[in-house]
Length: 236
Image 1 (cartoon, helix red, strand yellow):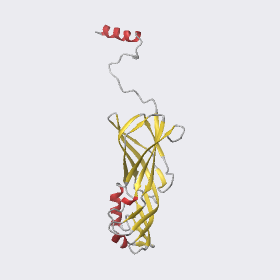
Image 2: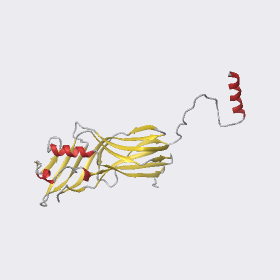
Image 3: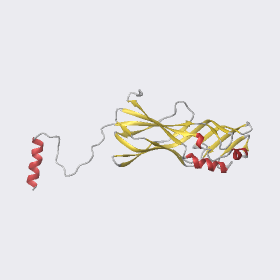
Image 4: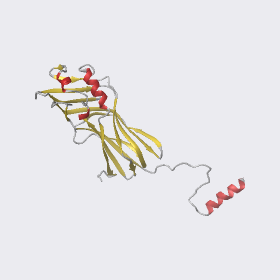
């Protein structure tokens, strides 16, 4: 049997087939190239009318300190997870969002989830700060500030994507700010405690409203698709 096996191996080499050796087991070929996937976060729907009222919230500024982005998907049936490093002082209202990248091997990725991670801070650099104005039913505008300091994920589900190694990809997670106060009423904001004339919503100020917003924060994520760029940086 051993001699027969050696004879077969020699025959394969002599006939010039694509096999370079005789192996009893095999594995999937390694990826020959890769692409960059860059992430960003941007605020959307900054104006919101509160439930069952004419009172409005208009967010005008926001900053995030993101502890990392997480790309989760399946490739060839296997779970894939790639995590980026952190991004600090991200202007959520910038026309051109700050971007950070990861490297993905070529292939088709399915069941994609993209997560922006917020991590509780022990410093003054909070994970998320939003500022704007609350206009009550009487038309009076009051400054409002949301100071978030907890762990949270802003998640978006994405469509399947083919990483081809010849183009890079960019994707933006959108924070739909009109979803943050879905369970907060105008009456609650009218009765909120003011700090130097501002409605400050934090773990220690107007804490009940803070918890209502915190519960909806993970639901505010959205996705606007993948944008392809060739390797020279020109969009397709």
